[in-house]
Length: 211
Image 1 (spheres, helix red, strand yellow):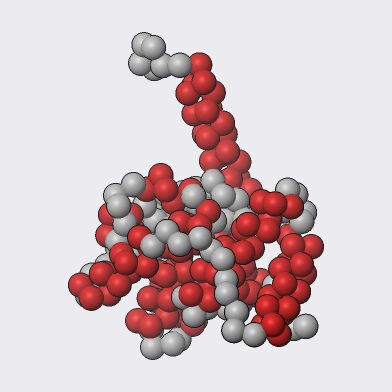
Image 2 (cartoon, one colour; image 1 turned 135 degrees about the vertical axis):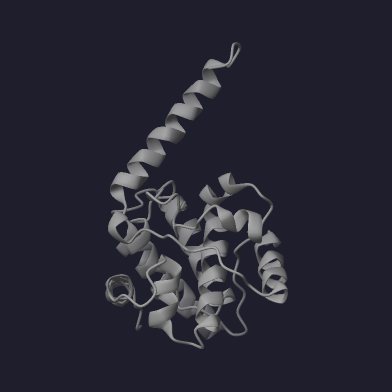
């Protein structure tokens, strides 16, 4: 430890390390993310970089009152389902708002994204996989260099992690011509194997909203 390193900083560092460790232990580590760095077209890289750089707050807008009412019903239902995992109501609502916003923005179903997070991190914000993937959607740090600002620590920020994860999954779905099974395998670094896609699809059903 460097001389002069303040007690407060030491304390915060200790909290961060403990949170990361518990995130790892509490996550579904069997399936934790391990995306592979691969060549992507410059146009795709630029598009992804533009998306993740947009810091717009995750506040959805609606064209009609029926859609807004459906969203509010979804928010209430999902908040109830998530309460055991995320006890603080405000944190839970902010998380769900971001899930809805980032999922819809990427053309994904919020239920699928929630199912993926349940498998990847168990909804642990500071989860770290054995391969080094970070956060709620278990994004590999190399993405912060490929499409971000070279600061992988930001992958522990809720909305940033969701934006990366949803954008990367959308890219994989497009790369696989809409084949969700193969895209999910690619997201997990296990392309062609059934375990991970099957786990995500099973958990997706738990988060469906049909009202």
